[in-house]
View 1 (tube, helix red, strand yellow):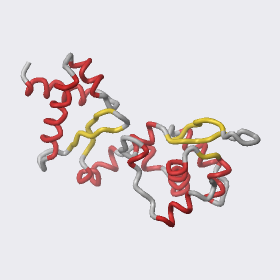
View 2 (view 1 turned 60 degrees about the horizontal axis):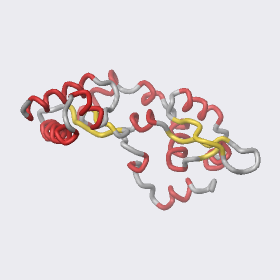
View 3 (view 1 turned 180 degrees about the horizontal axis):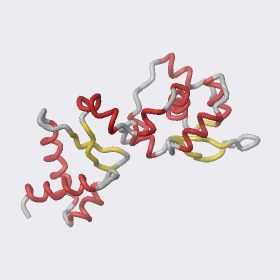
View 4 (view 1 turned 180 degrees about the vertical axis):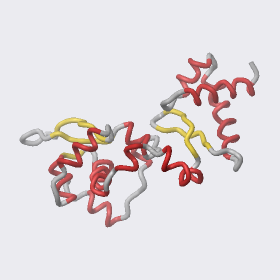
Length: 179
């Protein structure tokens, strides 16, 4: 098979998959080497960079997938936006950002930073699978610690938590209150 045909095959697989796909999985599905898959991904990225494409190929949560270009999103958001993205209240987003930047973090630590009860927001974020229990803190009472999930990364188009925007000094200090 020539590279153009292999690239078309990889592109079709990415189109059909509903979740991000790793290079290793793409190689297995397409019956190609990982090196050839990497070349195909580079070609697809080059092709979708142009103004004539409404999508781009990105890595999210360790796998590759197509997403609409940011320039298109203002028109597409109302119809195709994530159900949870449009409905998260300011309080839920604040709680989610505290967890994202401070994880692993306990309910009491979240409440110390927010200054109000976090029960309802934690319950909502757990229901939406944006956060999960990641362990217990080694202090008396062993309170549950929370962290973000792959769903969180997908919602915000992040490959890893390290890609979160950096906080300025005042914001960073606020998120450290519970430590």
